[in-house]
Amino acid sequence: MQDVNEIKLLLDARIPLVVIETFEEKKALDVLLKVANTQGKDLHRWSLTDGLARLNFGPQLVPKGSSLNDPEEMLRHIKHQHQPAMFALCDLHPFLSDNAQVVRLLKDIALNHFAVSHTLVLLSYQLRLPPELSRYSASYALTLPSDDKIMDIIREEAKDWSDRHAGARVKTDNLTLKKLVNNLQGMSVSDVRRLVRSAIWNDGSLNEDDLPKINKAKFALLDMEGVVSFEQQTEDFSNVGGLQNLKRWLLTRRGAFNDEESKLDRPKGILLLGVQGGGKSLAAKAVAGLWGLPLMRMDVGALYNKFHGETERNLREALKLADAMSPCVLWLDEIEKGMAQDGNDNGVSQRLLGTLLTWMAERRSRVFIVATSNDISRLPPELIRKGRLDEIFFVDLPEAAVRQDIFSIHLRKRGCDALQFDLQRLADASDGFSGSEIEQAIIAALYSAAAEAQVLTTDILLREIAATSPLSVVMAEQISQLRRWAEDRTIPA
Image 1 (cartoon, rainbow, N blue to C red):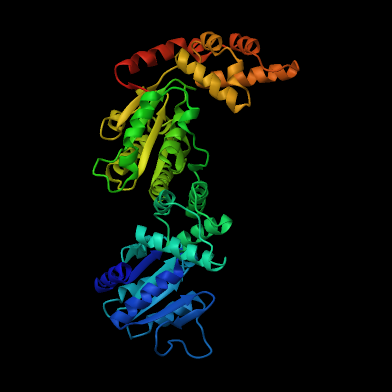
Image 2 (image 1 turned 90 degrees about the horizontal axis):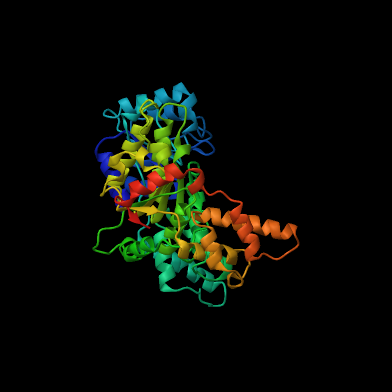
């Protein structure tokens, strides 16, 4: 009923052109039919294939034997009708960019609205009116299903599967259903039904394994991949060495973020600052894994486009996608690449910053930001102050105990028994190594062992470690400066 009431308000406001962007044409037409019937108006539908035809009861506008498939003929016909009516024009958008006659006829009908109050509803999956028409128009977005409606759809699809399988029940649990409802927010009724049906009919169950697949399918349906990518592989914190303070911080706030009824302030986001290769990216993936949320990665550097205004549009579209994927984790990778205060980009970075800050201040969606940076000195203070983000964590080079954990994790990943290695010697020998440098040393050692037709040993690993010059040595001055800056200004991760 909300859609019906809101469209009635647009008609009462005497707006001649109404734009509805949706993939759910049938739902939109059903809503318009209810509006027309309650308002006592005729409703006609036009498409390129079917021409102009009346949807509610009454005589047709088009003479028998004619269908008015041509958009110009159809609009001229409407222009000369003296009985006010509603017209749902489906997929007229291709004719708005290259047909001046269609644009002018739409404008003529709009200008004559107070003499003959026709209402033209332009229905399309995507539609942008020319500037000369936009001042006579209003856009309307169909309401999306509520949590209760989503649950009803899940029950309907589960019942349908059960009826077709001799009364067998769909296997699931309450926690999975709650997460599923959360993840399906922001989708249309038909898309929700399609995703739920696909998951149920796959194996007759709804379980944790279905959630990443549904999130990936949801992202694909939104059809906005570009500077934002869907990261299907999140991480478990058991695969992250160290970062105990960050893990504790996240655990204490997980409930407040995931529970919509929590009375605590919802966490906004964090900035992970640190040495390159220290595990910031891995930690960003682990946040999504720990909270059981889809992870969206925004490549901030890829926002930039040489055409004026396109860079800012890229950011707006990316943030719109994050809102649509809510609840989710939005990983702003190397944020300084897009928000740096260089002053030599004709103000693009400042406009990007303004767009991002506005979204951060006004957003109501459950999007948790994880920004990563290698150089905080390039970031504007208004972005990193408290209130924008909750906390700044410094991901330092790992200590000896953490290096042992990192060796153990990466050896296990490659099918090696960590207990067969002298982890203490390896940790001592790799002082100053980052997590990624330890991983690369293991990879190099495995190649060496294979070339020598041997199994991997501690000695082979030590040899590769000795042959490696870590970043803490190659760029000692810069890393020392970064660590000194972070010492009293950030929280150790």
